[in-house]
Image: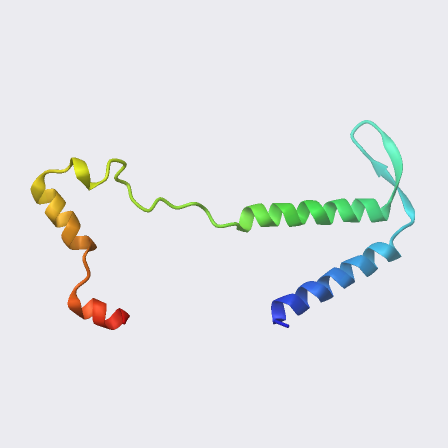
Length: 98
């Protein structure tokens, strides 16, 4: 097992134990209403919202690979030749990749 998998298992067990220990009801003030709600629900919802926000904040952003929407086909012949030369690998580069 990888370290990441072990960490996820341990973290999940700790959160589960923490939630099961805190099952008593507490008075919770919503904006207009005061309710008695289990700590389990409050902590569980806050943990879930935290994971969702962390995932959304940490996901990779989409990147634009090129800024040319039309591509090289609409360029002049000189510009197309320059574009093609930039995309070709030299023999030295090909040897290095192999």
